[in-house]
Length: 383
Image 1: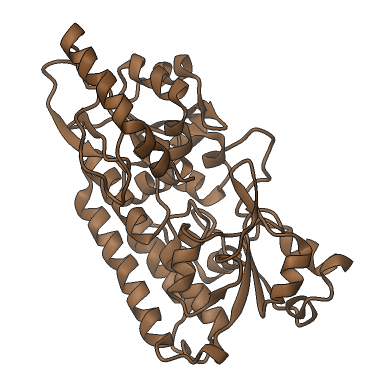
Image 2: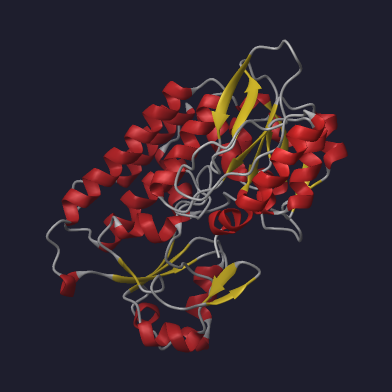
């Protein structure tokens, strides 16, 4: 059950409690969003800036209307994706609180030195509220998993720090999240420019693969972090991959869920026998190619197991903002003849220059495309 469906079940009872609270105490209530892509507002959050400070109202991914300062100077990014977006919007120097995962990608840390010194008040979607208060953020971005935990949101509500929930499961919702972050930190125009580029990449690839016969569509298995972890229907990777003409073999299957993550057993992967395997975590390609258990797969026998690039983040990851580049790269990998004019090195250089003001050489881009030395190994309990 998705986070929005859970909120749908709770909203009626919650609104009744809120009305009683208003009548008895006259205080401003905390509201949870209803379900849907961009849910309707059910009121403003209690977490508002000090009285008299100029504010704006921002609707988050759950439809909560949240008052934040009109001029944000200190930003808490308790979801790594939002740190990438804040950096892309040119305000990375304002980041004062992060999750450990945001400290693992080398390129973002070179671009935003503030991340190295930022406090880490969140681990495994749990917030250390005392540490967060020390960071003195004007606004905090949290993920949907944290928002689902009433104990965590209660701590945030009590602190008075305005927080925005960032949650998405498809391209439209991700584009909304980017614009929402842009509005919250005063960078809407840059956010809209990024989303236009995003849509342009989709349009270019869809045009290139249009009319592709079903018999010629490439079947891929997408490994997410771990060799056997993969995608299900209703997730961002399932959506962006569908725009490339690729058949993602796992998205219409009933997969085993463990700790909110979905896994395919090796027997099922053999039944799919994909043409290509795309892997987003360094080291997994070597594991698959060297493992005797995977050796009977057609993709392994043909050495068609590809490491997905890593730049600011892992391209195509469920929480990556480099989805446009992942769309270009995956389409080019699957259908090189249909995208013969697409130069992924040049496209990548132009992307990082335009949106991050990073001048990357051909050698730099080669490391990004091979994911060489771009991401520190994960320690236990890191987000």
